[in-house]
Length: 79
Image 1 (cartoon, one colour):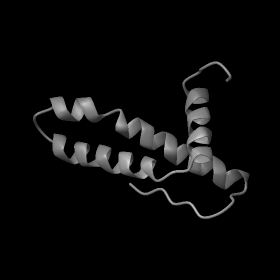
Image 2 (tube, rainbow, N blue to C red; image 1 turned 45 degrees about the vertical axis):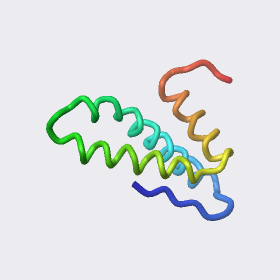
Image 3 (spheres, rainbow, N blue to C red; image 1 turned 90 degrees about the vertical axis):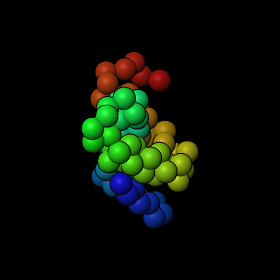
Image 4 (cartoon, rainbow, N blue to C red; image 1 turned 120 degrees about the vertical axis):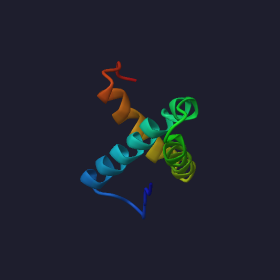
């Protein structure tokens, strides 16, 4: 799973990056399930590990934008 970032982004690019980051958060949520499942869990666990590594490389503003998008998608209250 790859998330790339290079310099400032216009609005659409920022939204797309935030959506990619939100997807990484979704993937990291699969970790417990991947550990519990006896069959086919290794590919999913590898995907979780890749998502965590990608999240570690993001800047604070990128993470904030992704968390805000995720909150909106989940129907949370405004910050």
